[in-house]
Image (cartoon, rainbow, N blue to C red; front, side, top):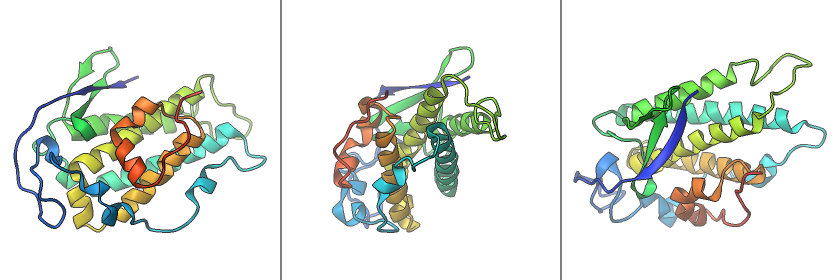
Length: 231
């Protein structure tokens, strides 16, 4: 079973940014060094619907919590994997030599032997998505047959999945928001992030330190309040 860790880095470089999104200088992995365009109100206010996202996160009456977490885990994985796939041509070993998140955080994968692998973003997220896919298709972890029970420690596996999904969105915001905006997908990204953030808060799936890299976006989207501390 793999794992994940994050470490800060100060590596920087220069490139060119589209003037319609940001005039700041770019550093490693296309991230904006002087400003973060996804925080601008003109972008942060855009969503694909006006539904009550908080209501969508609540456990429905009479529904088993493990079943609710499992079904939502599958749904979030499918949506985020599809979204990241749409940007795959922009996320390559040359454009993203490290798996960065906001604040120049670098995500490092831990393999089955406990070795930390500092790898490119596409490789890191390939590891992440493959790990999640393996979990979701394992009947011992995510049972689909009637009468089956969820394993001891199921919640901890779900927490790990959501951490990886959160980091996927963090990388997209940090390194690929310009392309997301150019493709007209930023409203979809905001909606997906809002739903994920509120779901994790409602069910205590992430710690405060996990969401810290995008805390400024959480504030910009008006999602402040509540706690993320795991139970």
